[in-house]
Figure 1 (cartoon, helix red, strand yellow):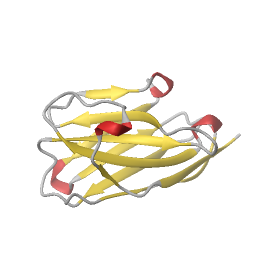
Figure 2: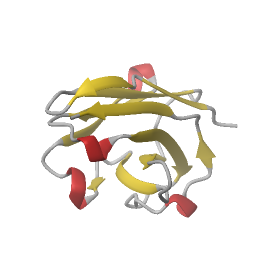
Figure 3: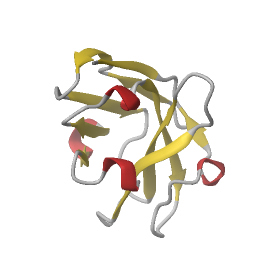
Figure 4: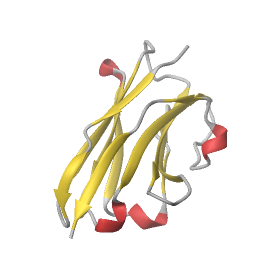
Length: 124
């Protein structure tokens, strides 16, 4: 079974940056897609970005141009570089994975494996 752990969250001022990491307990990210999701207090969980083993990516409109997803297969880790952070980016960020060779999506029901989240707080 795949186990995921997200970390790297914290408190940052608006305009700042954070890099989140999603470490997986699999040998390689081949044939997996990994997604990042977030849930703000009182709101539904929403897809932020995802990456599949072919390098295809997805970004939600509200993070395009600010967030970048990448992977280091040698470390079994997927990163989410978050720049130009805004107070509305404040949320619990979680990563998820699914075995697939297709394009990934920002739909949470599509993913089978979830890690615990990491909290991101952006102050104004």
